[in-house]
Image 1 (cartoon, rainbow, N blue to C red):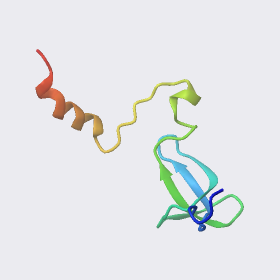
Image 2 (tube, rainbow, N blue to C red; image 1 turned 45 degrees about the horizontal axis):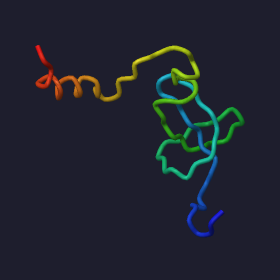
Image 3 (tube, rainbow, N blue to C red; image 1 turned 180 degrees about the vertical axis):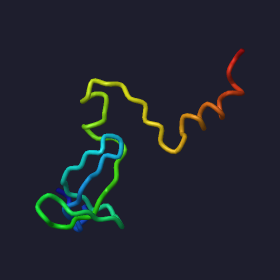
Image 4 (cartoon, rainbow, N blue to C red; image 1 turned 30 degrees about the vertical axis):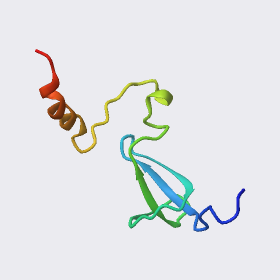
Length: 85
């Protein structure tokens, strides 16, 4: 690997899938203010994600609609004026 371009503050974190309510341990250098206790009794920072292998249609075989912060409504409102009647 090229020297000096990769972050050196990787640590173990909990990734929490908000859609499927599923958690897994991994490594990340992303900042997080939240922390939770894992099954081993240790406290780890939590990185919240909206899609993981537990909720992605490719892995689950189910097509689910994830509407985060009303994005679909915003899209429909924005492009309603372009819709041909």
